[in-house]
Image (tube, rainbow, N blue to C red; front, side, top):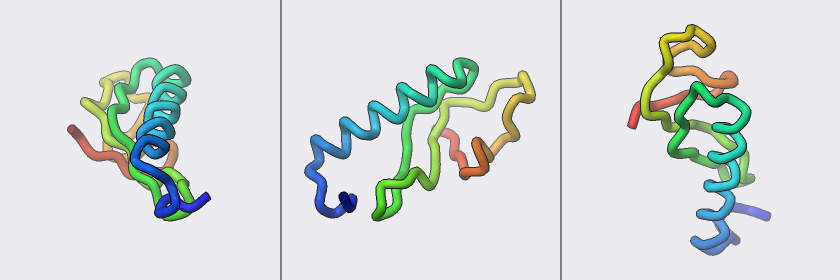
Length: 69
């Protein structure tokens, strides 16, 4: 399904599912937002802060751009 074919409720549910999945997999990363392309592939993450653990490089997470919220 294309992003443009989805309702706002479906998009919000997809965002919540993806954010919860990412935060469960990487508990030291506080992902709070995601951005999708038309094919519903995540193209960017928004996070509260980059942890000092060094597990991720600031601005990059899973080779996808991040931005601070």
